[in-house]
Length: 251
Image (cartoon, helix red, strand yellow):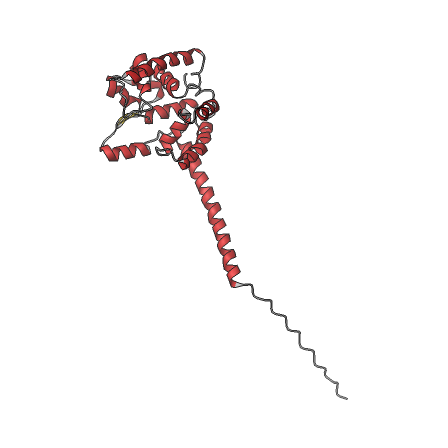
């Protein structure tokens, strides 16, 4: 007797999943791509910034934005790097007395000076030597909020990475002392015909006195403003030498 053959039931067809909206897929991909580029750019930016700060621990900055712009305008520059050991200590104290008397006491920002500047309606500056060094080495001249924000971000990094002595060494080598004259070595020869190590107390004070306005003040032909400021700087330099506010940058 022949066996009856039963047909197996056909497998049920899987219900097709609804396709996601193509527009939503495209938007999701773009968001993911934007996030990827954002984090990649952020990591690279942070890495380059840290490297730019660390490299100048051992390498002297070859130039600055201000130097490049002045060279393009004037056609030439007078600047020669000099190690801090080859600079008269009285000049170092004079610069600190003139620009940032509490240089050894703060961490990059002088809170007391900032408060005083705000109370006077912003008529006086409150930038520390560290902030000025950051501006001179990495940024450009100007008063834009964007530049000030970058300066505020870089200043703590420089304070952490560099010693106070290194900050001051770089500052005195990149600061402008006259039109096209950058650094203490060029300034000492330009104004007085001497080596930086041979600057006298008065010469050092007069050089420091021109720093806020190097294009309008002269250390060798001082007007009453420079003479009065130099006298004040000499007193200040003597004071910070006595009360140990120079220990962070002197041997």
